[in-house]
Amino acid sequence: MHIGTSFYEEKDLKKFNFLSLGENVQIKKSVGLYFIENISIGDNTRIDDNVVIVSSEKGPGVKIGNYVH
Image 1 (cartoon, rainbow, N blue to C red):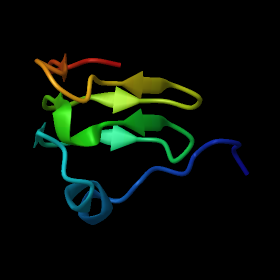
Image 2: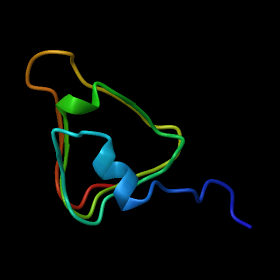
Image 3: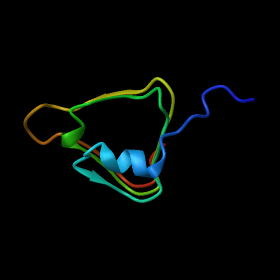
């Protein structure tokens, strides 16, 4: 058994209402995401345990590019 191997499924990520969501995105369930509607995530991106991403409620938001880990 590995600790921290629980990722959201693609269908769940699509329900979160990201500003944009690329292909092959992996996000661990322990990640904190605030103001998701202002967060863009590119293709082939992975976000691991205990990361917290806080976007602004208004304004440009947060953009995470392609091939980011």
